[in-house]
Length: 148
Image (cartoon, rainbow, N blue to C red; front, side, top):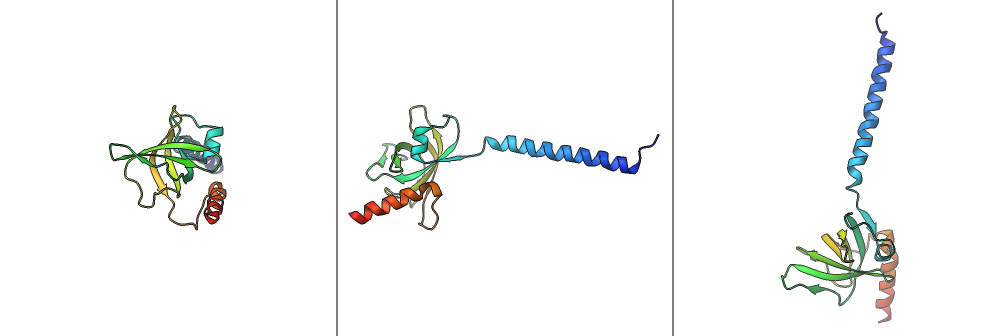
């Protein structure tokens, strides 16, 4: 008995649909470990991520906290949001706009010792774009600077 053309098209459509769903699930599973979640210091202090999970930490570099290590490459500093403070260590070339009192997004992992070890630093270059999690910090910093 021969398979009708209509049935053959339905079988092929079903196979294509299953393959498409399978590819989507496989891509989602593969990319879930690549997702980088954004934390502000208060969120990280209240609910720290697993030590092996890559995340982003955003906040303001606390004035007076930046200390260069003797190796000349490593810098230690504190990222704050006005509610919590997270110590950060970064070894590498710093962005030219990375200074105390400015906004920063550090990409890396929280160590078991509570120090955030950054692989990459993103310095904020202007005030046109601020992540919604950092808007309150930006306004608080401006209010403090205006009272000085």
